[in-house]
Length: 398
Image (spheres, rainbow, N blue to C red):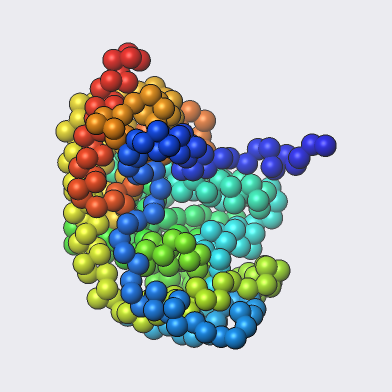
């Protein structure tokens, strides 16, 4: 029996598919610095754990398909602190931001329709596009330009009769770029002109550095009936395992369609929603020291990598990722080698090959995505091991 074409063709995650090699290295006693995945070691806030421990309902029953109203209210209060007015019926709680992406793709597009994306992009968009039978149409951004958005004319040239939406991620995963209001307005004009939807992945909105600020697509009133924001507590509150996200929209039509998808999977996790309520009630002050910590980590990793001959990178403005070009032909081969054939003082590093963050064939083969999710001391050690590994690999594979 053959499995489906979808099952055969869907992309394996470049973030996770090489994990077995890391497991083998650890089994041999090698210390692996995991910079491949956005799973921060910043402690989860205490109110989150207190909410878990205080849960004592006699039955762990189904909740509402759209999530608890108390969580909707807490999120409305949270967004109001950013000057973004929402009502509970603008928010649909999902099983992680991933489910919100899947719902968004299925709401805005039919099989064979197109969504414009800017590459490199969060690799799992590829997987959810396969689930929805939607085509991602890429526009390639350049590290030399800071991964800024292209001109309005260049974006418009990609719009066809099958285009249904444009997808933005800011602060960006995997580049760390924070789009300016002018860049967002450029896209908003095209969305309005061509009657498209605008999907904004804003799960890193709190993590913006160097005095910059994040602007949400929810702030553009002229297109509020065609915007969808993907949201999540995973990175916001260092709660990656809780799997609580949200689809946010002011469009009643989008909301009602997404709600039907939500009803099909019954409900999002109940106990984790209670924990999310506690997290959102902490207020914005919680992020001040967290933001400072990530900026320090960024600076340590950036300066360390920049000092390595042949390495090229752009200093990210937000999130906690960077795309790094290194002097090898095939980063995936290099990453596997680092895990199977190399260690420096019994230490090695795992990063994510960037090729899987592109749709255009051949792009990103000499790039990696690296996540500054470990404490400064570990990042410094990781840079030393990485540099030693790169030098040895280049000598073996000139």
